[in-house]
Amino acid sequence: MSILVTGGAGYIGSTVVRELVRQGEDVVVFDNLSQGHRRAVAEEATLVVGDLRDADAIQSVFRTHDIDAVMHFASHTLVGESMSEPFLYLDTNIRCGLNLMKAALEHGADRFILSSTANLFGLPDEMPITEETTIDPGSPYGESKRVLERYLYWLDRTRGMTFAALRYFNAAGAAGPNHGEDHDPETHLIPIVLEVALGQREEIVIFGDDYDTPDGTCVRDYIHVLDLAQAHILALRALEDGTSRVYNLGNGNGYSVREVIETARTVTGRDIPARIGERRPGDPAKLIADAGRIRGELGWDPEYPALADIISTAWKWHVNHPDGYDSVDARPA
Ligand code: UFG
Image (cartoon, rainbow, N blue to C red; front, side, top):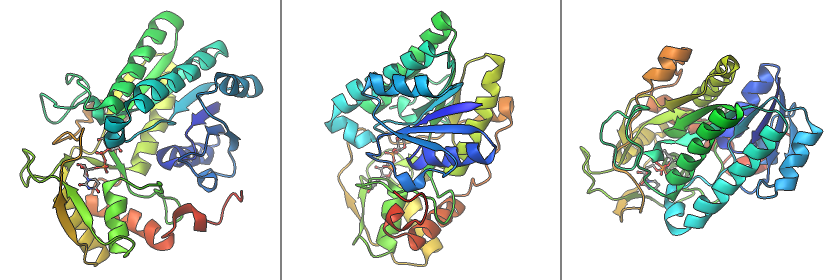
């Protein structure tokens, strides 16, 4: 099978690409390298550098390669940024997704996996969050994913597109000691905490301690990036029966920001100075997944559910590559 992976040079996308090529799949990565890294892309995959805003560029990929299925990771993905730059999300994210869906359907690629998000749920009316929980996005970012999920729903009903919307909770951890998370600028909690442990930053600022949670800091469900990758493989195979699906992907365990910092202190054996700052706009207080549906239907069984294990894999990556992919010796530019 030939699979197009947009954003396949990014943190989660490149991890899934590695797993796909390991399973012998033919993979074409389409990435503008604005956030991704050439060196993160498995050498067995074909890398096309291009931008989804350019409808001709993505059409040309489908003309050149015989694509059966699409995995769409390329996206602006920051909750906080979407509150200050809403059009990057309400316009760009949606336009790019549409350009891709149109090109895919025009060229007969009728299986589509969308990276969706727990930020579909801003103030969830139940916890843990199931696929039936009322959708009420927490930010323009969550809204952009809701719209793309709805477009897929209608393309299923009108054009025979079969899709899986995978709603990630908080992706974390490293796929290996030479393959991990490298954003510029980094905004995510675990990498920032580990940069403090490494002495690259002075402190971690906790964004608010007056939330309605046990210790006042936000609670999230951290899921290892390799477990996310497995969910994509299972979803891709499942789409062969022509049934579209929506799944939540998390461990069902909620950890507060304080608990993450405390666990990182234990894992690294380093002092990690922290202080309380202002709330970050768009942050829901608590997001915990009920992933019972994908466990029951597809047998998904996360291998790294423990927060200490997740942080420990990320720590190995950060220690080995304190400057990220610049020091990774693979896929020379
Ligand atoms: N946080 C801090 N200080 C920091 C960074 C983060 O206190 O310096 C807090 C945030 O306020 C939040 C928690 O740590 O409560 C996790 O924040 P991240 O930025 O690591 O992740 P988010 O929960 O904001 O978002 C991530 C992905 C989104 C995805 C979401 C799903 O970036 O794409 O998880 O829950 F939608």
